[in-house]
Image 1 (cartoon, helix red, strand yellow):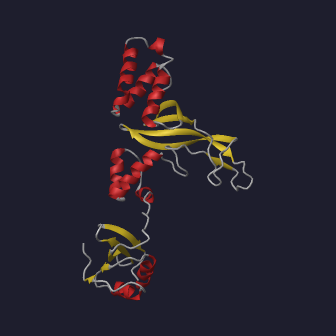
Image 2 (spheres, helix red, strand yellow):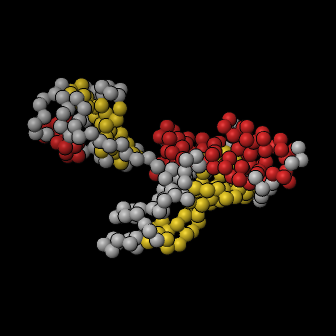
Image 3 (spheres, rainbow, N blue to C red):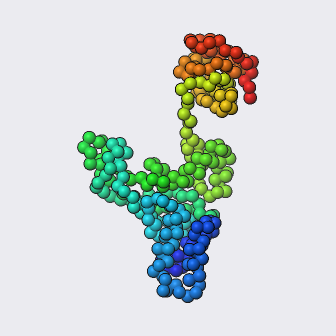
Length: 284
């Protein structure tokens, strides 16, 4: 797929198949003009119309320019160039003034209809002119599209992270196969980040042990019973680890626990914690 009316019509048909109403009128106009035999007259206009349509669908509000769209190995390959302001050094945050070189990086994008989309993005490498900075060169990042050390776009990464949060590992992989983005279990789990732990323990703290691997490795899960959500996960089930956590996170008034002696020992060891009513079993 190169230039000319056929190229413009194919791109618009692919974009329209995704169900975007914003481009429906543009695509209808392009197809009507080509069918009416006016393709030669408007041939020089169609590539820019189609490129603009692809930019509106794939990169709305992002500083890139789409130069070419082609069908490559069953995927839609989009060649684009970064057009944003010079980047900032990731270490000293000084904005660059000189370009060192440029190179192409491939990004997996969100699928367009039933088609995989690969963005072949040309980005610039800049010099860092601050003498005190240890970094001599760096590659620009396009806000809203690229992240350091990632081979997927920001949008696709957000999709995969949401799927991993809801489904976990293997179920998320099965859903990704249906939705087209290629993602393995390890990649999905790496996208999960631990939520921040509050400085104070909840008023009603639930404590229970669980197994990372049955019969081998155990941990401890801490739950805010009133809010019904997990607070933290401890790497083992020893009284020393739980006691250290209570000292670093004061504020628990009621501790719901099972009959494990480690929890009872930790609560008694912690200084400054008043005696709290304790339930026999963890409320589930």
